[in-house]
Image 1 (tube, rainbow, N blue to C red):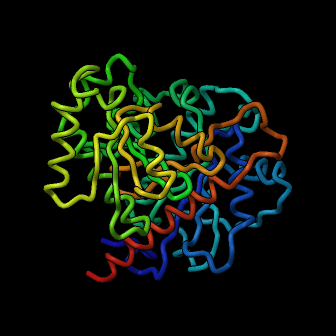
Image 2: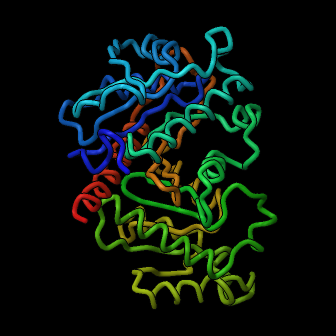
Length: 346
């Protein structure tokens, strides 16, 4: 059943935007994002969070935000309207800028869970969150490795949920993520590599590229040098790439990890599957740290954030750059719009 104002009754998607870590630059970035959106934006916005957090971010950003209040019991949101769902997740006296705290972690978790709950009910079509802090999340009660795995567990999602990143139109995902480097090789299987290719292809397609061109990175130096430096390329990664090709994916690899990102930088591929976290993240952050974004893949709704952190060292200075969060918002709006169009056509 669709709730009032739900997806199928809207001509364009509605995105929930949340402030992230209340002790970081997230509230400032949210205020800058909201103040900078155009009237003809491709998605409506529902701000989700504590009133004093949003107001504090606006003061730091030097902007005025006048947001009509909304609750799930209110009348349906009007299209074109930016509204604010008020939460009470943290008291003003518990906000300690520049510190990772238990109170901040609980606030982040409650705000995230509220946002995905609204998406599951059909009140919003996607979520964009400002930078958060994993230490605070763990202090606040998160037992999973990261916020993606927490949301997957919270939603009861079975299967593969992994991050995807993008900078300047180049997309990446990885077969393993927040695990110790010594464990990486044992976690790489044909099925995991194939799943990563599928996930990357589908995401790049939803982002607007109809025929994604992909590359898969090797694990070992020189792609294993024909087995001299490891056999993962011969026994696991190569066969997975062949399986992907047989299923119709436009993919090459395994490509030497020290040069695979040149394919993306030169525009020869649209996306790269890496084997582990830093294999992709170092390259992507070198390409544009203040322009990078993250998509939480494998969840029932599109969720994006900027690739930057909570930046405790510059909290309250008003100098945090909003470009990456703006790219993240634009992406989730694009994906949600394409999904809305498909839903309306069926």
